[in-house]
Length: 226
Image (cartoon, rainbow, N blue to C red; front, side, top):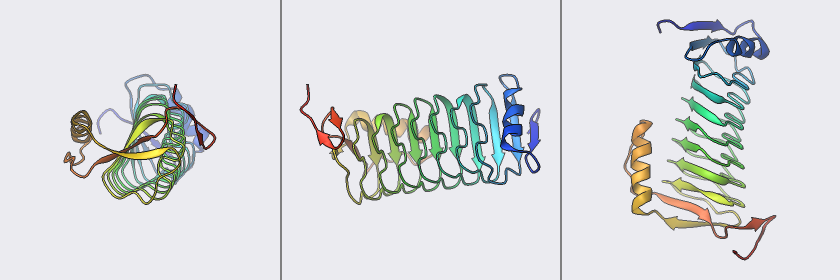
């Protein structure tokens, strides 16, 4: 890549890597080599940077990201993109538990499988999982959209409050306050557009969606709407 700043992470701590990233100007392109599955790479970045990471990363990659674009050429550990407010995170491989936990905005793409509690307490934004997602996907989900192209394990949408989980594969079981609904023509158009945009097959057949039964739901006890 031309005009790219290269950071060799072999002998650097995560704090040292992040300090270098925070010192760059908006619009910069960065290649991080030899990340060695270090945790917290890209934590708290507020610059509009393009960051390419060649290798596996540990926990909390791009946590609290606000504007940067991250592409990880490998796998990621737990809580990838945690509390992201704006920007982009793409994991080319698999990701651990809690991907997209608490995000307020932005887009997270996982080309492989995801662990448990994907999109837990997410408020807004978009998460796309190219493979399967494990148990309690969408736990306490409060908004935004999730698209799962594979299967979802048990307790899907547990205690969901708002938002939508689109799923193409099988759902082992639903959590409290979650129900499965058929997709609408509007859903189909949304899915075709966003899947094509991020280089996934845009065929919308077999998709269904998981949505809340009640709009107000507290501590496992659905309340009356109103």
